[in-house]
Image (cartoon, rainbow, N blue to C red):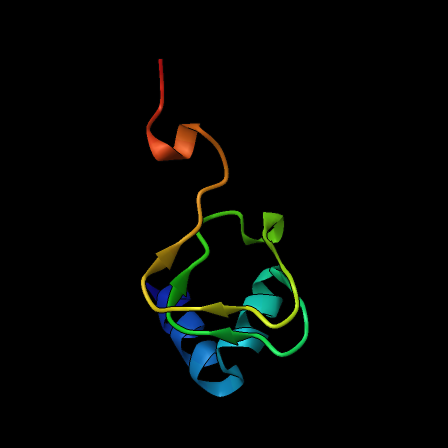
Length: 70
């Protein structure tokens, strides 16, 4: 719970793009990111230049996370 409060405060202070970079997301120049869920392994995500990501976007890292288990 304390972690969630800390993350919310960091998000408000830094803004979406800088906060994502703090989490480990590699982001190019001139990007616009709204409320996005980067999941548990944000360091695996790379976003190029001039990208806009809208609110509600979720990132999946593997087939396992999407529920395609055998």
